[in-house]
Image 1: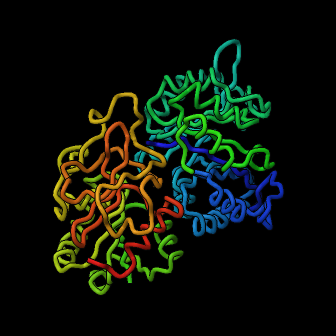
Image 2 (image 1 turned 180 degrees about the vertical axis):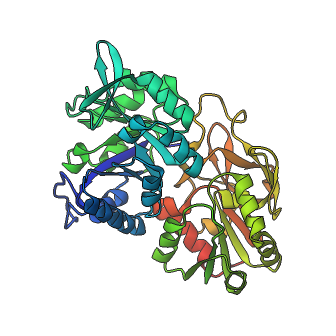
Length: 252
Length: 205
């Protein structure tokens, strides 16, 4: 049976993980290599590294770090942040990324999804969508959730999947940071709209939130979170045991 | 020495890193002399079957792989590299494979229940069909990482392990010195490294 994936997301700025905390056995929690290794050893099914650096130097440092991560961690790695061209795909794939997540880059130029999928395969292209309710409809936001694009979310996601996006990460801006659970209604709507894996993001506050997500939407493929893992509020092995106790199939 | 055949498809970074991490002496090469000199061969690959088969043929490495296989050298195909070991594939038309294993590569679409996502992507548990040395260090149910939309069918005589996805999908095949994994051992954590280690060790054919 295919297992539900649990995916920690690490924000990297100038080569360091932002918002790390202390874990036993991890000497340097802001080292992407050490923290990534810790998660990999502790049951993470995949890792997402999000490059939040703005400068050119920072970007070079990021790919350097990515190479070191990929040399030591043998689970799937997704990279996002600052992906605007096919050359950006090339840059991170050469350093060991398996999938590349696009967000604002695809909004600026939707053909990026098609070109990248044609060149590297659908499985390589992950659409990351920041979605928020506006006047009763789901809307796509750009620039880290700060700017309303006016686009209706479901049709945007459908369009990108049609062009070759092989997975969709749905970040609900409405539930993000609130820690009261995933946005079941929004995720359900996306799940019904496309036939590629959908990854839930935004709102995880407790183990129960993950159980609720996979129970309410049995076809959701994965859950992504950052702070609950980084702050040690949820340990992935405990989370997976709880999921298994609730008859949700996970890799232990 | 393990020769990882570089015929211009896919990214060999992780595969080489994982082989290095288990201490396997590895060379990434398209040089026939280096491939002939190697103890074992790994045939990697991602992308479309037709393109990959063409590239392998254009480089002349298809014949070399067949000759080496016939001489008894151990070969491990990974993902698309495993699919290439079969007689043919129906991915976007009909394409000839290397024909080292009996069977063909077919579309999941229409052969798995509607509603299951295609590609089959993620961690899935292995079901053992018979004993084999590639399974030496792992246990039934151990999870490995899959990403594929086509699968090998009609390969009962080489079938070693499957994974359940609406039906049993071919996961590991082996016939004498020719072996293959549909999943990515280099992306399957400790379990994947154990499978690679079992392949890289001295054979017990």
